[in-house]
Length: 279
Image (cartoon, rainbow, N blue to C red; front, top):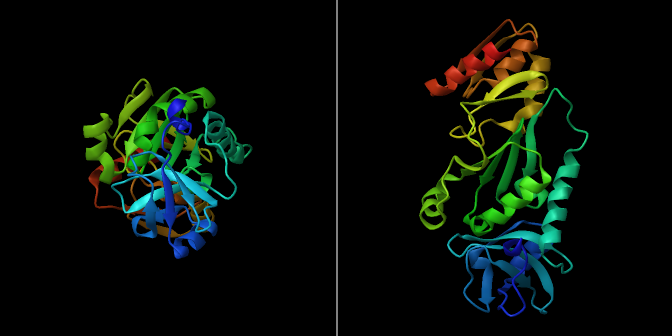
């Protein structure tokens, strides 16, 4: 886990000082630091560096992941009192995210978000579960130098058969050229044969984890889909921009008179048909 730990004492740690306005924003809990907020650094930062931010009185303010090529220069990992960012710290951060999900789901739901980016203290990173397949979505190149160590941590702490890497479109060319990482790459286990089938509140859905939008399904809309189910009884439902028909299947189960999916993508509509057939 050496890359996830702070750099050795012999190395020159990246130290940043920021504007007064940015200090206030960081103290308020904002998870991002933009390039124009930095007015002093002790050396040029490298991709994935742990950047330590100090206030005007030279007191520790925060630490985050540094990206020298992004206007969103630092993604804050921790703010407040100084902490040692080592392997144990990362393990504890992951454990916190997993504990938050304990007891939320039963056997009728095995598709849900395990790590929700900034909300769980993993800025620019999402980890979704679809049954025994995990999908890791990265929105910042700052995670790329740490990918092997993250993978080792996830496979050690989370039971799974496969981990798929998904990359935000803006970092895909860089990731492939500099790190030989590509969107849809299998990081662990065997590649799924076709789509992955999972349960959400007793409804079966397919997720195209290799090429689909986001991580293959919009898991963050689960509660909204349940609300549509409660409202749909006896109504004619139009689902515009329907994607793979998640809201539509819920509406049908809720007793809608009819459900119509509308989407520009023929591929998405075919997926919606298969989701109805699964149920």
